[in-house]
Image 1 (cartoon, rainbow, N blue to C red):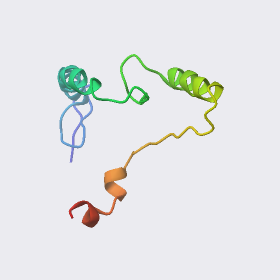
Image 2 (cartoon, helix red, strand yellow; image 1 turned 90 degrees about the vertical axis):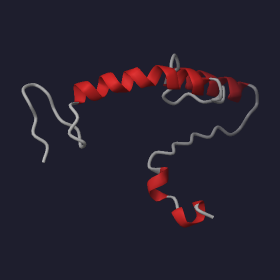
Image 3 (cartoon, rainbow, N blue to C red; image 1 turned 120 degrees about the vertical axis):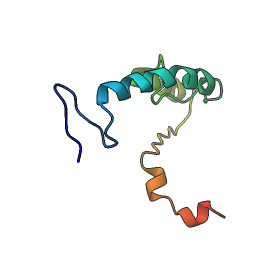
Length: 89
């Protein structure tokens, strides 16, 4: 069982959340630099320098251009729910 130390909490792996945040930031920038190059211009979720307001503005532009459908896809827990037998084929 995880035991919190003075003013620190432990995550499920027993790593302090402060240390986990530092590690996350250290690897986030290099990964982001690589993956930003290949992401769709229409992607707004969890992207640097993009917000939900930006996505709404883009959606309004699409509607004004005559598009009738706007699709929002969230793959949260996709890999928990997907049929893994079909993925392994």
